[in-house]
Picture (spheres, one colour):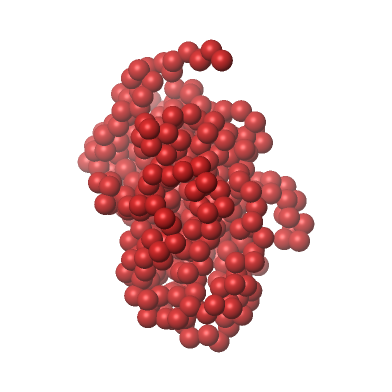
Length: 388
């Protein structure tokens, strides 16, 4: 087979990536200098920032995730409110470094990756909030947003989207490496030793921090389990864990994706029979569920092909109890992004910058092998500022 033409060189740009994940904790930013030379993407992080959602906004977003409590007025208002929050994050970053382009993840409130009549899911679809026009108008920065829709239109599941950037930024020639993100939802990308895009394996493994965080908020009045202390103090309920692991999603073959519309605290308490259990035991069991579903995914889909290392990113990388459980299950070295010299939150935030950069130049920025799309896609919608 004759290799295709080498990718064209792309000029250097300073791009701001913004990520607001399923943990609903706020917006992370990374300002990065990107340039593609001789087919490889060179990158240098210039700045990082974060902005927590105000409690009222976070509460409204949590309500929007629940079809029983959400409504069209709430969704419509939140689209603007999140856009304003994005604009504030862009303005803060642009005050420190001149930004030429911004890429927004959007705040996912509902994701339907496959029909499921029992849940009332009939049309593959997804919705991310945060109007990019607000950013462009308030900050004067060209902004790329709504990446998932282009992939969906091409027959993909609209996730996982970050695998494209993983391949560009983190592939190591001669090494088969997995990048494991543990945000609200946990997802993995396996980067092949030869760097072939078609050989990348990526999918959502299931819950990451979302169930743990919900349980902490419901039972302890805290947004997350700091240092995994509550989980470490509790007892895993084996029969509850076994029932939770029977969820059909865990046995679906990749490509596959999921979200908080499936994995809720109510689901876990009811399916696991955990109502009335000691709160620490609930948190311990849900932490064990996240670790088990991640490890099971590797055992089922990854390890047979060999694996040199797992790099762990996201908030879960800062949970020692969750990391302890993963290290006990996986027979390969695990390093957090921090241990590898990166920031734990860089992975998904950098992906938004990379995808925006590629979209700006009309280059594909999605891996069909990861999402199931029929062909490569130039994903994202561009808002340009008025230059008076």
